[in-house]
Length: 438
Image 1 (cartoon, rainbow, N blue to C red):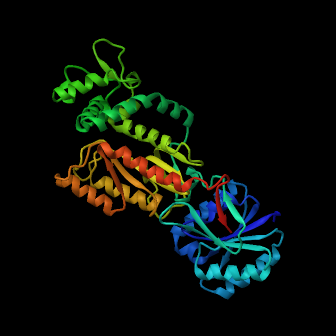
Image 2: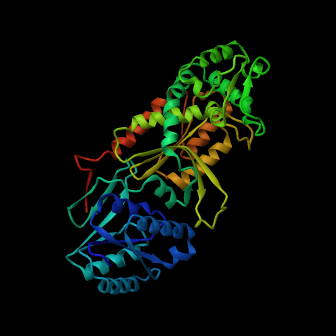
Image 3: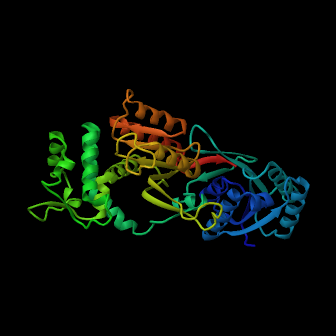
């Protein structure tokens, strides 16, 4: 075993409590010992999967990882095994024990074994999440500080820990260049929707996208918008006025083809996606980037497509989840779902409207990917009208599932307020990071 500190932790469903302090602040650790019982290994696949994935993440990061299988609920048996292991593998400078995960028997037996073997050469701590702020809290047997001044898990690792692989992870530089080029147009449409009539803006763009071919996969591109089908897009003079303004908006040529005098065209599927609601995702993405620009070690991603990894054998392997905007900050994942369609809609309707299916989908994402103290929010430029029963019912249902719902002109205010709270919790204290006692 390599020299340096050894880090001992217990297998758990929520492996972030083991990985974050190790990756973010314990620079002298070279080796990791994972205590695992038969329950977490075999009978509980929800624990087994993150343990397997965590070991892979640690090995990719260059750690030497070993697993010690221990009995269930046998305090003295666990202690005996760990004492024997520590006496055999004794080439370490000191022991750092994270007592957060695992069962109480595992934690107490491990702590007792460590004190027995190295009474003057160990440190132990609990890693907890405060429900009010996202900053971690340490408590331990020493006042020596752990400084979390390095990034812990990255977004790909965090999702892998949850059992998901990112399907569209390539071409980030080109993707960012396209997003930046369309940013002025996305913001222009966003302003038009949130300061004007959102129903007109969203309705015209959604119909324009559908006429452009989103509803028919056999339609070639570009699909024209001319006098013959303009009535399907512009239903009254306010719609026509918005179309006229849109065609002179900044960077509109990025999504509309003006090369022919007799028609205007939508050049490709990416432009169709942008007009059909992608503009809101991109506008929100840049609002998030701006709001968190001063916050270190933050990752923001747009339009993620996720598939279950190979170890999630207890679920359907063809399941794909989508996240419009994902934010990893302070060891937590926050999800923003952007919709521009009208409220309500029939069950099974997969348009970009807001209905019960969307709430169900986002509620599942909230449970599986983000968690209790993370933000999962629905955003729609169309304001919720209290006197509309469907809209009010949807709002109440979303709130009951632990979701936020930000709509209309106040959408950006609410979003920035939430992001500011996340940033204040995650910004390091002082000059070196979170000073946390170990």
